[in-house]
Figure (cartoon, helix red, strand yellow):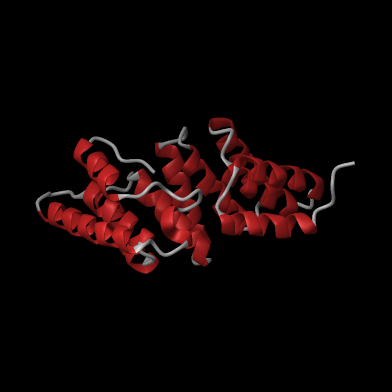
Length: 210
């Protein structure tokens, strides 16, 4: 995720946010009570900050990220949309909104446009490249998805989530052998427990390399 130009936001994020889960922060599980309290405090801090700025791109973005971690994707989407209305080149908001839209399966054309705009702003950020690949995957565009996941892996070679996504795209493309290899790499480099379980289920149906 990208935050630029406002050191105070980096500091606040370091204070309030827990170490991220391997995929999607706390998206995959409910935060523990102390974390929920800190997230609530952070949200109100950024909300107050947003009222004091003429163009509160960063505070609104952080509010969206907090809402995601609180398991409120619809409200997060609203914040990201507000950000993009202020700044159409806000890469983090575009990326996160594209991811949420892809996950929910809604308006994948718009999700693709957003993901492409985020990559145009930050082409060397692997999380953003991965999001573009994920949108392609959700659209059934396996070849394009594979290209993006491979780029993300080049940028961050030891990230198990990118290998997981790559494996899914290979399998979608009918290349089960390379899909299995990528999934095995995902387990090697590590993911969260839920993703690891999904990988093992996928491996059961993917033939081993000869």
